[in-house]
Image (cartoon, rainbow over the protein chains, first blue to last red):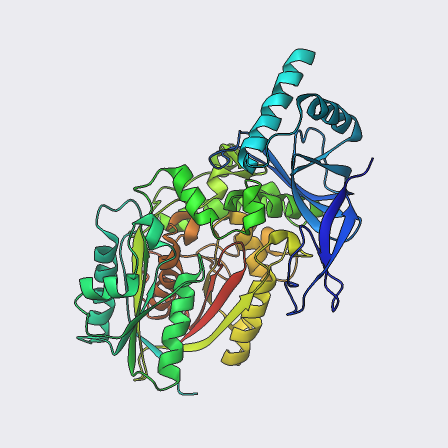
Length: 143
Length: 376
């Protein structure tokens, strides 16, 4: 299953941005809400070894060029062997987007189905942490 | 448009400073005024990026003016993130060029070293797009993304990026006002701690305190402001088609060279925004100082060293002189003026008559190019 990501398109220059914005960054016109498939190509990625407060080190960040046109910033659970230009799928784990191979996503989906979704009020940082802690636990178990 | 001149410059030593920020700024300002032979300017433009959070004070234009004895001088504050100093210089230039004021003091400063590094990173990070920030993006993280894109494109090599740090530290070692006055080796840079892969600690500028000031006048002086350009880009890095070149720099350079009516080939010495060393290489090409794809090789070959064809960052740059945010854009201009007037002691470039200062705001969202010319 490919996740659909909310985006918006400029009626004047056709630029697509995700998440959606009211105004096009380059034109003073209202953008049209659309959705784009959560798959694309890695434009660049980095691993942050001193992430800001609330994020666990190392923090993997990537810019992904979605097939629908927008460039998207997301987390990754691993960058081992990752290359610029690699095809990735993107999935939201409780509103935090991760790029990943489908196999890992399937496991994540199963996990979240079991534990249920965190409350809407839990902030993004806490959710990110939970996801990362879970991943390191599962990696430990399989080791 | 009437000519505008730099009649005086001043700056503090950059580094870890104990003095309160207004005191540092007063020191730089009074040095610049003394050189200009002025008791008081007709107006003041203050540059500070975020004194509200770094030092806890607001209404900072009045704060600084009052604490340097100029409560009666009209003062305003200008902010464009890390290029605030260059923006303030523009605001001062515009006032004199428009004939509104005959003299304007432009003074910038920042004080950050009293805060823990994660806090400083967080505060600087406020200038990043909120969505990208929510994903943990910091300035080094975004610079890491840019650097990986550069390396992947094959445009530059790790050694070339590291050599920028080696060169700028070597220059900083000749500048008594620089934050870092110790040279570093290529090996030390290449083996330093990874910060935002592939960006390492010694690719990054330090957290610094400091202040710098210039006095702009309508009355002729030794250095004329030949051109100023501003360039802008999207706040969000993900909204850009190109990561390995900064639109905001190219736009600013076009405007500045257009105003100056000369081209990049006439520049003798330049201060370039090297908050992260790959940015110096990107900028040299965006500014037109080196052809596309040639800046890295030229750096390894020593073309940008103090004795090279086009010395870059003779002050040590942000990398070694230090980066007290809003002071930086003005400190770059101070170094250019010293070069143009033969006062860059220990690091003087012979016969420098045209200088360029390039300042990046945020992750290249609001950049400035300033061109200065020595008068015969």
